[in-house]
Amino acid sequence: MACEPTEGNMAKTKCFQECSLLSDICISTSAAPTYFPAHYFETKDEDGSVRSFDLIDGGVAANNPVNSDRHEPNFKEILMGKFKFSDMEPSGSNRMLVLSLGTGAAKQEEKYNAPTASQWGMLNWVFNNGATPLIDVYSNASSDMVDIHVSTLFQSLHAKKNYLRIQNDTLTGDEASTDVATEENMQRLVQIGKELLEKPVSRVNLETGKFEAIEGEGTCGEALSNFAELLSNKRKLR
Image (cartoon, rainbow, N blue to C red):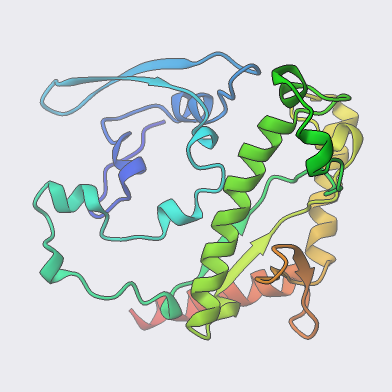
C-alpha cells in the first residue's frame, strides 16, 4: 500500500511520498527504543532517486504531535519556495478543529518529592522501586506541555471547544504497561477506549496543569459527533 503524494501535505507526510509502504511507516512509528528495533527502509521517487530512512519512534521528539501538525503551510514548504512569509495569513485557530487522542497514561500519583529525589544517584533516576522516573518525566512532560500550550491558544481565542483532547491518565497495572500484549490486556484496553466515549469532556486546568472534567459540555462521544457534523457541514459548503 502506498502513500500517494498530495499538494500541501505536512512535512512528515511528505517524507514518505516516494511510494513508501504503509507497513514501513507503521513499523517506524512503533519502534520505541528498548521495546522494538530501529527500522530502515528506502523509497524511490518517479525520477528514480532513492532516499533512505533510519527511524525510531517519533515519540522521542514529539510524544504529543499536535503542535507539530498545527501549522500549515509549513516551514519546509517555505524553504522549497512554495510559499513566502508575505503570502501567509494568521493560522486562524478559531476556525480550526483539533482532535487529540492520547494512548493512555499511568495514574498520576505524587510518588516523589524534592528532598527524596535530591538524594538519588544515576541508578535511582533510571529505575526506582519498579518505576522509571527519568523516562517518565521526559515522556509525560513533553506530552503535557503540548496539551497546555494548545489549550492556552484555543482558550485565548475563545474557541476552547474547537480543541478536543481525549486521554485516560488513570491506568494501572498491565493497562499502563507498554509491552503487555496479552489478549486479556488488549481486550481490556478496547473496553477502556469505549468507556472513554461515555465520560465527560475534559480539559487541562491552566492553573494546575491537571486534566479535569468540564460540566455542561457533554460526553467525549457527543463531542466527537459534533466534530463530525461540523466537518460534514463544512465539506457541503465547498
